[in-house]
Length: 110
Length: 116
Image (cartoon, rainbow over all chains, first blue to last red; front, top):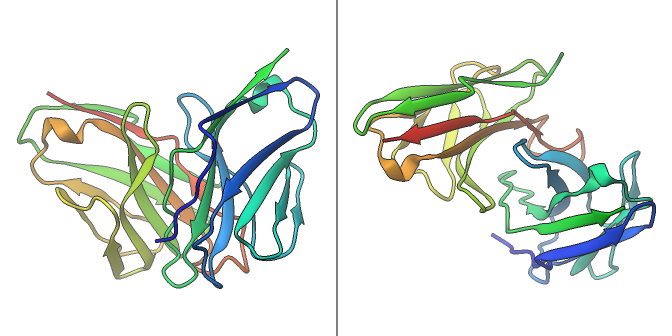
């Protein structure tokens, strides 16, 4: 299964944009890029996913590099409630498996 | 509310006991899976199912059995609990294997299992 690489931790100030990077150099053509976040003592929560084009939803934006070897999750205006572990995951296009890595712990400072 | 329901929320077992963790979804999702999360770690895939009657192994399947007799339910069975199985267990579902439709996975709130 293709792996992703994320920084262990990042910090942000409240009300500022946050760019969370992810490298996935071994991505295959049918793998979708997924982002989830997990707040303390809760189950993961879906944030966004995409294949090739940039994607926007009410929670975030996903910017995908043209060669698909990297992507960036963009939180447009961080709030204290956005402090969580953010996971970048490649979902296998054939089996549908979602294999988690270690994720990035985002701290948001007031 | 529509979603993934896991029961029980907490469980303590003695070594060697068996039990079943229940998972049910009411969203008509075809794809379901079980994960475990050890303290300070990411989630690891135990078993998954792409539809009723079909199951397959994930990253860490040893010590666990699953079945999928209906679209709605995907129970996880521990046949002989061991302390190494102390963990938080999450069930998740998605509309289909294909991401062209649907909005990713929906996760349950988890079952905290302690084996003593």
